[in-house]
Image 1 (cartoon, rainbow, N blue to C red):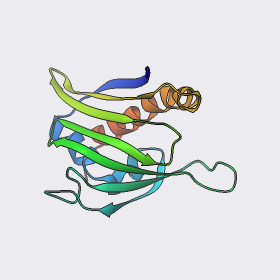
Image 2 (cartoon, rainbow, N blue to C red; image 1 turned 45 degrees about the vertical axis):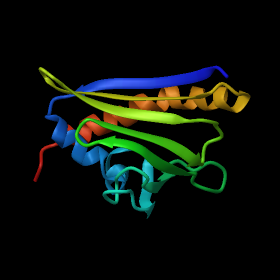
Image 3 (cartoon, helix red, strand yellow; image 1 turned 90 degrees about the horizontal axis):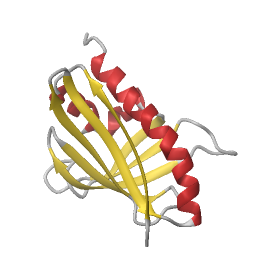
Length: 150
């Protein structure tokens, strides 16, 4: 089956380890992304946020009478460099796989957040939303990474 893809990238003017500290712990996602709550359902192989960890994210925008919740699983982790995950429940797509990569750049860290999933009718509708949401997520991550530390 053909795939749908969405991605965004931006450079943060900080080292990769600063960005990684925000990306590698879902508990801080509500501080920089479009989520109001987050938590872990189960720990990963080597750490709470390692391969196999299952977590949830509650969106900050209400749809109807509820805030949407996404359940996601970490598929692979290269600390400081890459995080791959899939959505188990929460958005109506099949075979969703996302990857966030951090690449050292002369001016800081290039962040790329991209995903692909099956090109179904619902998958195309989700594409309309995520193609606009990914740049917002990456911009929030960059802003948080570049914020002065107290």
